[in-house]
Length: 438
Image 1 (cartoon, rainbow, N blue to C red):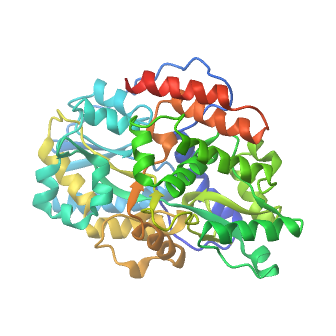
Image 2: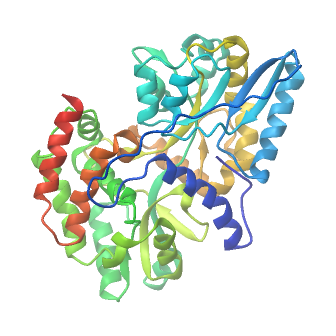
């Protein structure tokens, strides 16, 4: 999740952001090449040592692995136990990655645990299978339903019930090298037309305008998320992601043609598709490229950023915001104690402490509206402005589907970058959609 802010060296920044990069890459990795047999999902195991403690044991599944990141959680746990002496909270890593959450819930239906999870396809599956505890009345009674925006609460809703408490999110933006923009008197563009003008000025002056992480295909697919929402609107994008749209729709082809235009115009570094996220980011930091569409959790302070440009002002605005939060297994043995701890984690005081200790360092924002913005950095304030101006919040495409779909979409976009025909992988993508949803 999150740590302190303003580091004095790039080494410190990279150390913290490396944790987040691991989390995000683990969240949804897309295969680089043709389809490969998928490894069977490992079933997480829970090893609990015998104890004579008579208190109710609540296990807290967390992603924070380093000693530095664990200390604030110890403070939170100690404060909770001080006011709930009948409960003992044990922090466990549990080896629960975003790809094994559903397996964990299937194998440990009665385990008293509060799990940190992403709002991704595993969460959707868990809600569909009723593997998560219904939190509707619990959050309402605690007043948390009024503290969290509907746009984010909707991520954890299924058939009128609330199963997931979203607590933190990161955002996407076009990050840019400030020195390059100053050198050529460039201003962060707000519209697509002004964005294209900036791209051309940079290219005319021998500067590569754009680079991105092409190594896993994730950043390429994020471009699809944004181009589709900006060209066709977030409702069309949502319909496509929910299986109600077709990939051979002319609107999708407009997206692909726009992507091809950026590539063929020389606006994107040719070597992009071989680069990792860290390498792409370093390109922009060194000035080898001017800009990169990037997640805030990976972005160093040295870079400025602006919202992905508006292409059609008549359309609602959609933004991609990877979101994490908490769930409890549906058949948990001690639901009262587990929900008490979950409500405590989602409270304004706890969220404020986590924001101060973690979020200000790695580009995450708290969802609880009662967390004072006075503790936000300038970058957090700017990110909040982007998200608050959005009409729709979406999770990344590559976090929402099985790798079969993301693999084919990645191949379509990568073929365009390599100057290859993309018709065949586009046909396979539509066939896969029909197989997936029909």
